[in-house]
Length: 370
Ligand code: NAI
Ligand code: MG
Image 1 (cartoon, rainbow, N blue to C red):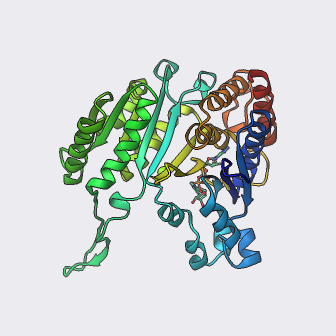
Image 2: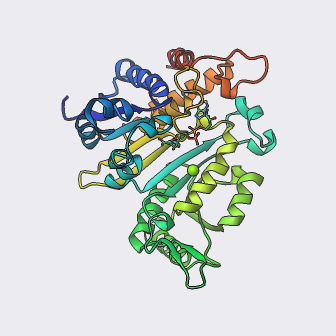
Image 3: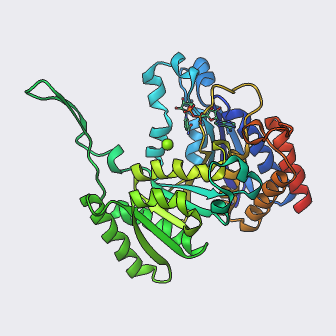
């Protein structure tokens, strides 16, 4: 591959991971051949299958492909396969440790309410109108990683569990920077979510986000919101948000809550971004928000749109092809408007497409909008 080729590692993983990823792989192929997007694709295995062959869930070849890649398209891991791999081997190549290894600190989850799917959301169509925002969740720090942590025995015989919420200046600033930069490409608004009325980490968070804006992002509008109010506002009036930035645990909860605006878990894409290196490159892992869905794995009925919409994010953020990203977005909308539905988003009486048929529908729509 020549040096202008962008390296993409495609790792389907386990459960429905390989099924949905096969469809996004076809979409990437379409952009490579039909639109000349310069990418070098490398497919690699992860999970039980390579474990049985090599003794590693993350074999050398896959680790190399991921190390070298500018972008990783990830499927899913987990499920019943997990039990067949000893915990030790599982942990050595786990997704959490990969996120740490590549320092993927900014987790982006776009929330877009598709008008064609408003029936499958528990929220009212009136509330879903114009919903289009991105939650950026800090992914490598906060209470999930703070020390000390543990469960201890107290003298009176009770047990006490404890964790430590923590954020440093640079950890706050780098994720806030991602939010301000993203807002500049959108509607120019950042809402920072914290619990500064109670938590010191949140006081620091709020001060640092405010200072960074004053220093470098005065053109971006910044507001602050307490996390409890944010949860309510996401359900009451989600259209008010453009970019929301928050810490690890708040982001975990708020993004699942916001997911309901999109109708199905199977629709949702995500991107996890690392630091910008000295050549201006930024490692990124793109994956659907859902997991390996063991209850439907192997049946060819999973919704591939979470994975396919992750390709929209890859086109925009790693491949630098905003027009192609818009094209794919239009194609997904067109396929849905034409009634293409997998089982998870089908209403009564609609034909249920297989995973591959949904891929076909998006490819056909791409041919029409291109
Ligand atoms: P899940 O997302 O795999 O499934 C939850 C429910 O949503 C299931 O009923 C499933 O059938 C449905 N669903 C999920 N994706 C779908 C799709 N594309 N189309 C249609 N229906 C879909 O979450 P669950 O059941 O909690 O976890 C299963 C396994 O996945 C666990 O081992 C978990 O650790 C793992 N997991 C892995 C993730 C990753 O690799 N990033 C993320 C989340 C969970
Ligand atoms: Mg979660």
